[in-house]
Image (tube, rainbow, N blue to C red; front, side):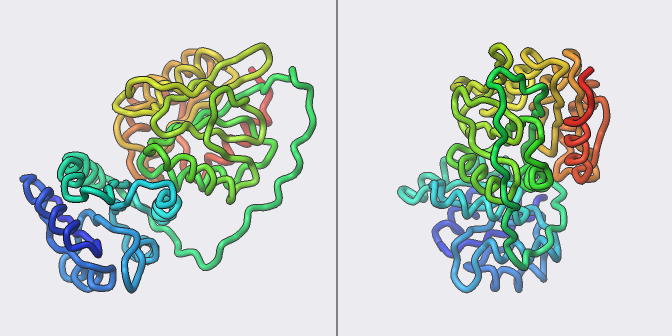
Length: 351
């Protein structure tokens, strides 16, 4: 049985979510509360396997509560959020604080929308129960990113030389922040797929951009891949790498989900294998499922260097494990070592 606790200031949300979850034979709702302070008192008596947490609540907001929780007793947490562009930035703060998933609710027709989405929530709870959240130190102050030097002028026909492709899912918001914050502006062009809903990726990229020396933004169709820039695939779209002459660029395309995901890591990695070959580094990071494993294998077969994040540093050792079992990754590296790996790759002579 997966023990679930619900924290939401809406009595209707708590009632409907409890009814949806209790219908599943392997899920038990062990408690609910209208705010984090009541929740913490109840949870001390019977600690849950998974926490479903609202963000905007009285007395203590969900993000403050989550930061306290993840610093003291990391618990798999799913954020129950309204899917709006304004709410996306707040929800991303929760991801940065250690949340492993987001369940979206609509403001209108709340009961009907929750009932319709109950199967998605049940799936997320089952996945969350298999995660291993890491301790996240509570932030005492916001540190501004170092000043970004002016982009050096260069010949427009100069090749990007090499590309770094990163693919991740559950736990990836924290992992990408740790990696990208340590990269210098002379880092190779980076293309990223992070499994994330539409509207969230733009806010996610903006948040990373505010923290990093390199520029980070949500990819636009035909954006050029260049040194000092990381492009994040938009939620609800696939992203592919292409090459024209001496330049790399990305295509942002619609299409059916691949491996149940859109954007899909496999779609990106296969395009990198096809168009960058041995000029690429592929890294598959923390995440549930097997998306990216076959694409990483294609990259290795095309001569790229391929790496999987190691089990100890993953929130979920799903995607890296699948890649290793396929023989797609040449080695494993801890999350903490990935920035050094990317830096060394950028400085090493091309094969």
